[in-house]
Image 1 (cartoon, rainbow, N blue to C red):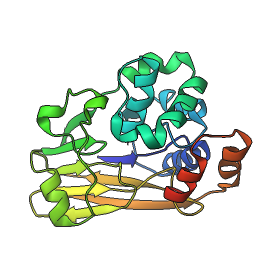
Image 2 (cartoon, one colour):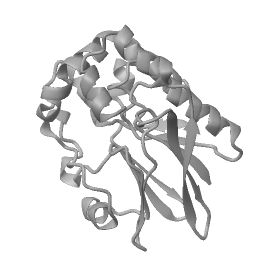
Image 3 (cartoon, rainbow, N blue to C red):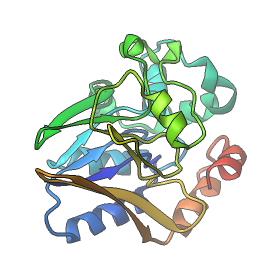
Length: 243
């Protein structure tokens, strides 16, 4: 079994298209798991959603930015931890979001669990404590980001039971193996400090599994130029923190 991992596209269509083209050229990949934050920060919202929801080989979960935008759509409480930095930006995203995607975004799960060759795999945007799995986004269900280390990540996911935990949210690559669980985050598709996109490939057979991070160059000039051309709110924050 071989499948691809994409996460944190963040409204960057060119990066997404580059990654999907690369995945489609590779032999043996028969599934893509998308770990959320497909919208927010970047400005190509509907093009990204057109692409991901049009594929039959992709399973998608929600990320915190996706849920925050949908809280505005649904007129439910917005998360306090994002309000100072992203509320105006998310309002802008919501105002450009095609209504055809409301229901699809609302229906995205937070967790996908699979078993391949007797190995349990957990797909999640980032750690949500088991007792908070149904907590609305304004209740801040996602755990705070921890510095990447085996010790920190093991403690972060201590309430989860899986042979492999695949996640995103923190755009830094993670790969740790504590002999009972492997933790893998390939990094962000859409937000990198350079003209490249990243994704992961996981291969699982009866004896073992392997995780590979793939880095693909692309032309990001149109994506960067679009922030000024479209007058995207929070542009300075986004460029300082993410690009």
